[in-house]
Amino acid sequence: MSNDKKDKTSKQPKEQVIQLYQGAKRIHPKMAKGRFANLRILAILATQFVFYVIPWFNWSGRQAVLFDIPERHFYIFGLSLGAGDLIYLTMLLIISAFGLFWWTTIAGRLWCGYSCPQTIYTEIMLWIDHFVEGDRNKRLKLDKEPWNFRKIRIKFTKYLIIFAVCAWTGITFAGWFTPIREFVPALFTFQAGGGSLFAAAFYGFMTWLMAHQMREQVCKYMCPYARFQSAMFDKDTLIISYDEERGEPRGARKKNAKKEDLPLGDCINCTMCVQVCPVGIDIRDGLQYQCIGCAACIDACDEIMDKMNYPRGLIRYTTESVLEHEYTDADIKKRLLRPRVLGYGAVLLVAVIAMITSIAFRQTLEVDIIKDRGVMLRENNRGWLENAYNLRIINDSEREQVLTAEVSGFDEIMLTGLPSEGLKVPARETITIPVQVSTIPEYADKGSHPIEFRFTYREADSNETNTIVEKASFIGE
Ligand code: SF4
Ligand code: SF4
Image (cartoon, rainbow, N blue to C red; front, side, top):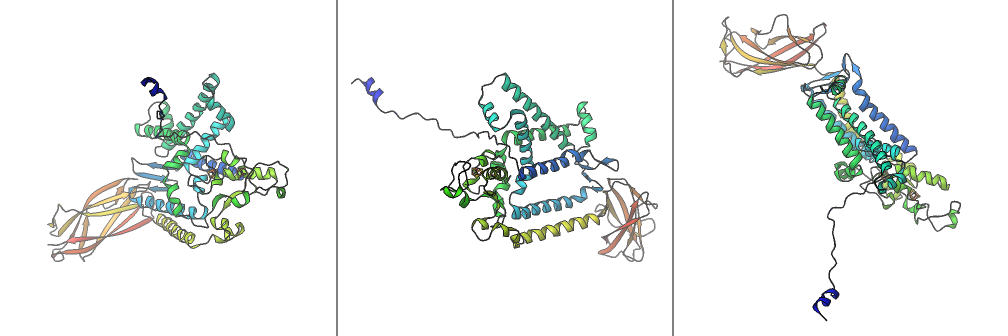
């Protein structure tokens, strides 16, 4: 045998191409109909009303809700918060975090399924898909079709609508941070500021990228909440679950077949629960971290159960304890008040009360007394010894304030530097003004002496006054 022949017959290892990266397959979920789909629509309408409409509301001649970052001033209807009020932002974050913990402990991923912006915008994109390209089967078919005029026309129409939705979403987002009634006309006359324009373009682009392109990939691979939520779950947390004991063994059957005559459970293996799932999982495989708790599979399965004349709830909201027969679905409500829920609830309540109280009693004017270190104790033209201070006055309100001050600490003490008719502090401004405190030399002996400033302020057109008391030190010889 020649060498050539030998080479041809000897076994060569087969060449294989191994993909180190597996691209995600596009999921085309079927549109679910039912109680929970209706709830989701309601949640979308409510949240999107807040997002798209609130920026257009006016309040006392200005945008009702505006987060003016360049001016470091936030307006929320009647509330006007300045740089000194950042504590409320911290409190709001704490309340949001504990609210989420509390809610997750009770109801699992209700936030993900009904109100997370990722879920909501993905759902809106799916509505557009459904509206333009048709239901799941038509979309799958269209994706497989070679490019032709019809496909180009359909895809072009869809992307045009998606572009309009994303662009308007971006413009609205920017409108929370810049007056929207000025921003929108400025956009169309090419006079919009660069910062606002960038915010609108960036948010619009991210809406398209996250909600249309990446969809469930964001929940599966990017969202940290999916990973740590299990720490908040307990055996009494509501989860969406397939009742394996009732459903298995699964299998197809004739519609009118008598249940008692079949060696099968209630699952007819129609796969409708899988077809409607926006993350492409099979709930029958058990609790999975990818499940966003949207309840589409409940609606789909309930519809099938109705058609089969079987009781609803093969897939349902339940708890781990119910699945382990510790109690029944009817007892779920009784397990609501458990230590973890009460603990998170108590912290949440305290934080909410603290925030409301502190906002209700907050001072709209703040005064910081800063000792002027560059000026030592000096004698003034009356022969008294004086210390110099700078008053930093922050007016967080939307009205001009008039401030007067007096000082105490010695029997003989005088404050100079403020106008006798009161210092006018313009709305939303911070001003710094030098003042002097003086006393007779007998009192200004060596060391630090406590003194007290008492500031009184009122709105320029009002007689109602507020008082701020601040402590300071007078440094003697
Ligand atoms: S929808 Fe219900 S019956 Fe159909 S496969 Fe899913 S669990 Fe089974
Ligand atoms: S398994 Fe059900 S609840 Fe979970 S994401 Fe899929 S459809 Fe939604």
